[in-house]
Image 1 (cartoon, rainbow, N blue to C red):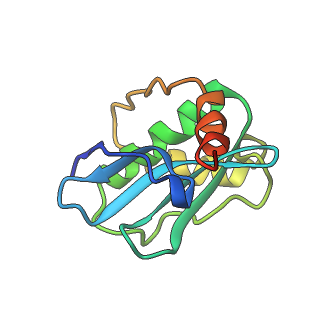
Image 2 (cartoon, rainbow, N blue to C red):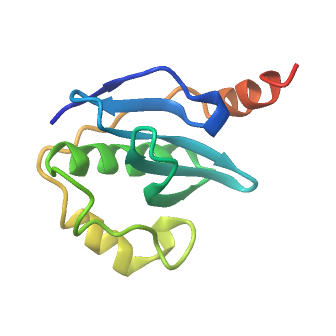
Length: 128
C-alpha cells in the first residue's frame, strides 16, 4: 500500500509526514536533542512501532526514511520489522542495517527531504 504526503502533526512533532492510502499507518521525521528519528505507527494510536534513530546527517536520514517507506509499502503491518537499533544512530549498528536491508523490496527510491532545520523552526515557532 502506497504512502502519500500528509500534513505535519505539530502536537506530536511529526514532520514530513506520510500516511498510507487507507489512512491507517503513518510515518514521519521526529526531532530529538541530538538528531532526528524516523517514527512509524498507526494513525491516532499515540504509540510508535518503529522508532529508528537517524542521527543528524541529512543524507543518512533520507536513506533511513526511504527504507522505512519502502518496507511499509510492501507489508500490511509492523510484524518482522525491527522496532529500533541497539546502537545509535542506525548506521553504526551492523545487525540492524543488515536486518532492514533484507526487508527492502527493489527498487529503493531515495526520498529527498526538506532541510532538517525546517522541522526545528516549525517546532519552536508553534509556541509563539
